[in-house]
Image 1: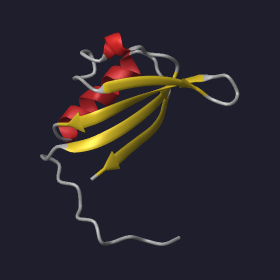
Image 2: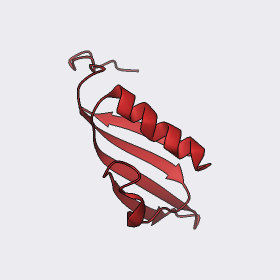
Image 3: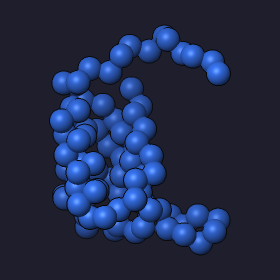
Length: 84
């Protein structure tokens, strides 16, 4: 495994762009519930649906709030990716 130490550590109180994937279908009307994140649903090659929530999250506390909403809806979390 190659380790990339060139990136700065993510600060807990700074905004960052995230991509969060869950199994199931959410349509764009859920965007307000998820703090304005862009919501896209797609079918996998197996015919299953997954949804990606993408956008800027204010800080780590806001990220935890989004993850709690995903949990509360009973959605299965697949991926949380930070693009900094």
